[in-house]
Image (cartoon, rainbow, N blue to C red; front, side, top):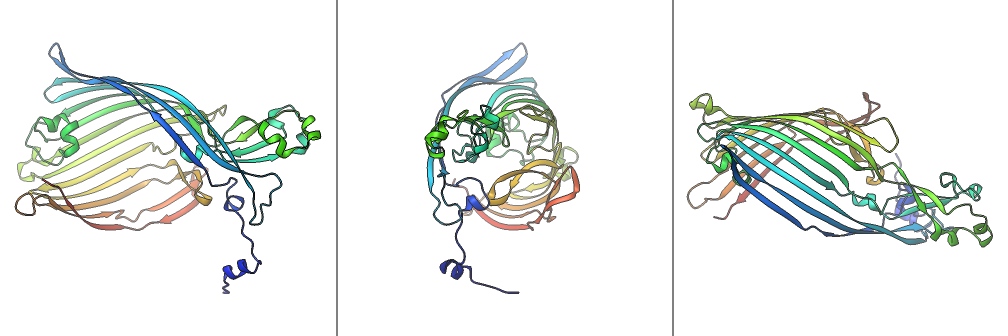
Length: 424
């Protein structure tokens, strides 16, 4: 094995620096995105009765007005891109939009222990900032100088899209919840539940069973590998002589970059059981189990491509199980989280985002804690946790064949000790 000092080779001129974007990325990486958002909303709370059935919930409307701008760079025509003297020219772009986001959440109290929930809402998700990058990698093909077809034009480019809009989702949910009567286990009612859970507000804590179904209609979904029409008029003086500009067929061209041409849906069902074991036998007071199972089907179509894919990040099957014990400030639990294989986004060259199929499986976590409930240490909690106890291997593969492995990574187990204090 031979070793050498690259810094001395750079100093004496043997090696020359190359901008990162010319070695592994097609775009200058120096860009900024700025958003100005205005989000007024109105909400009407409901707490009444329909006959003998209680009705709680709310209806409302939120307005989202966003003005977004992006600045970036492009390489100057004729600039040296193999040395350390690349000339960059600033570019900018942006757009503004207004979205109206209605919502409704209705809870029908069928009995003291049974709720039926309906909800519907329109939501939006902003694009990633790197997708709104205004930087461009402009090129010209002299053989297409006289072409009037934008798809075969002189100008073309790849980059981000400063005019990207947010993905929109229309969400519909229905769920049935049954709360068990019995002694409080104490596990379920944390500070957030005290505000959101009817069971905790009523002083319960005896566990519950819930089954729910959901449907999401997606539109304006961001296709990361699309193309869009762009007017390159501002680039003509930099790339063409006056004589060439006179014979230019069109200033329109194609930019390879993200667009809002995706649409699809997500639908599924979920079952949850929180069962304190004191409902089965009083000597088991403090023990309990929380089980959740979710089945999801999704479909996403980009542009005119008739072949759908699953929505990135979603598994068909997801299951979680937690076995816990809690008594007099002491708490211990062990959890198993499982998900089936799914299409996901991972980091590629120079941290660029690429889509690959991630292999599913289970991960195991555990936690032990003790909270001082009395005395001078009241409010103090000691916590010990262990994550990824099975040391699960992270793998990705291609062509829907787990044998065609693309990445194989092991991150190891993680152990931590912590202390928290809650002021009284």
